[in-house]
Figure 1 (cartoon, rainbow, N blue to C red):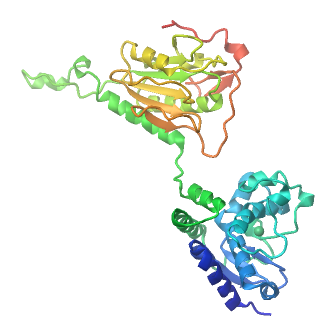
Figure 2 (cartoon, protein in one colour):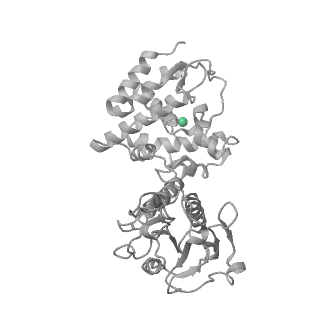
Figure 3 (tube, rainbow, N blue to C red):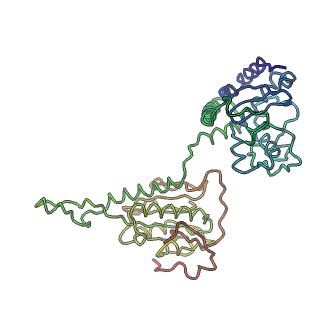
Length: 427
Ligand SMILES: [Zn+2]
């Protein structure tokens, strides 16, 4: 039996009449006959294996719906996600979870899947979750005997064509994903697109920028700004002054600006994130030539009253239980002498802010929690957390950060360090 390519083509046309934004993805599928397969399956190179007998048995809309189902395995890159979380020992459960992730949107789009498709309701879970979330609800023994191919889990199947047969390269596959995401996002602006497809497109179109690089870059550019605003008359005189009699030349060597780091030590701050953010700030300051003893670290919450000046961030303790008032911390930073030109604030953002920055200071705020109220516009704000990663509320523990000698921030328990921490004068 040969594959009814005309029917498959008619099915693609049928789908794109209702969902034209899926045309690029559907036409990227490379159709292959797989007699005896009993269904459709895909591989990562956008090859679609179809059992000719099944194509004959299903209606054109049903074939179209299954084509859409299969192409979403590829658009959502289930194989790469399978590798990321390591599900090779339970491929059937993963396939079932992925089908649940896909099928709620197909039902919303009115696409008639044949048979009894896996849905979130079947797993007793709400629509709109990701396969990783559905997976926990699928014991392997209860997983459906569905097999949508190596495009779902990355494990080669007997029917897969090898690399010698042209399919899409990984780069081409990414281009199809990007083009489809743009089409979906455009379509969502003017019409009805299932919610899960919209959320996927938003995620796919969001530039993936590592907050660590952004934070380090903001601190470096803050240093550059600050060193350009240092009073040159206090710098060492230029050696060229001697050769230009009568002229007072500013020093060409830019002095290193003074820096303050204000750390929100209220209980709500995620201390693991705080440690990471501090390590980035520390690295950027060092790369900018700022010696550690030129950095003043202030810890700030409301309970301790005035901000505490500590000799290094290693001495900062998360007291726990307190709220935050960064107006206190920023006022303390502004009162330091010499006055800092750069102030870096690490906070979860749940704090009142002063109306203006300390005079003559550039302020960089590393925001450690999604959903926090936005800091004022006079601050450079870096969202210092990973998208999609839920941060947990910190338990009151000490952070050992701004490491004095070793490579990164580490934590120690409050009980072991609380008695020695928060040393130094109280301002
Ligand atoms: Zn599937």
